[in-house]
Image (cartoon, rainbow, N blue to C red; front, top):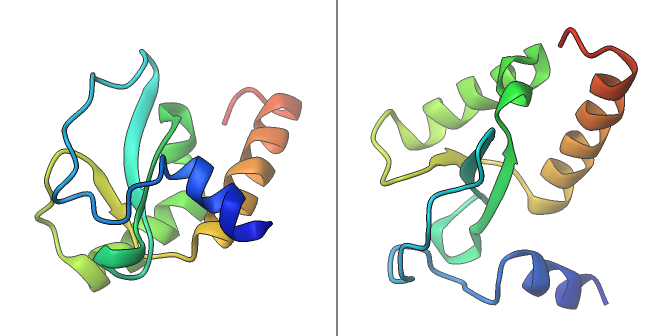
Length: 101
């Protein structure tokens, strides 16, 4: 079941370097590649305002150490997809309780 959910979230694509570039993300959202290596990366869109949260900033710093500064078209997040989705859900629930984030 978990594999099926991951496949649905990731659009069935396993390698984003070879996948077609789709339309721009919705206004207020940012496209990110999530995964610890290129073969397991998943392309997601997250609310741009979440990028300013301290936990997300820490994750970006760790990802910079893993992938460096260069990227193609989206941020790369070096994180297990399940951990990332849990973090985003936590940040969203926190944001709804405290919109100043």
